Image 1 (cartoon, rainbow, N blue to C red):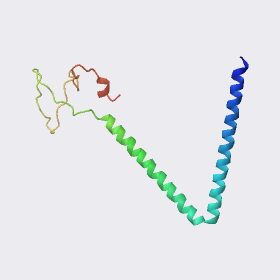
Image 2: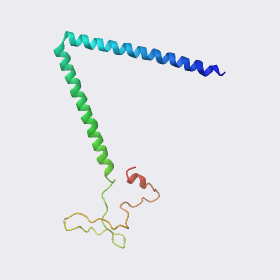
Image 3: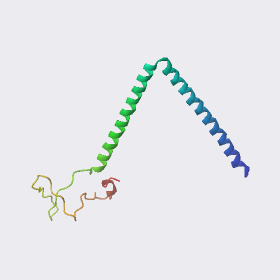
Image 4: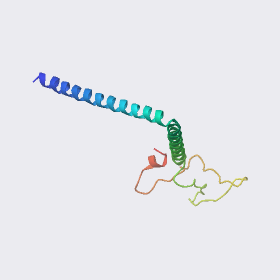
Length: 126
């Protein structure tokens, strides 16, 4: 029974070696085809490479745009910041002199907990 894992490891090594040999043959064939294409039609090959580079550049820009959009979304609260509240709990609607809403006092939470559902981790962007 001690020899059984060794046989499995040996089998896996053979499979890995076959796969690596296949991948190496495939890579060599692809390089040979690319070299032949460049030799037959150098202008067309250059145009194809330029198109591929442009496509890769656009894909990278698209990924960057998605990442920036994702970061901006994660920085936003689920709804606007509530205004300051009076002692009776109603909002004052007061504004600063520059026209922006006042920030709530330090003792007031920016997002009141939902009744029966304590899920504040969501509001903090986690």
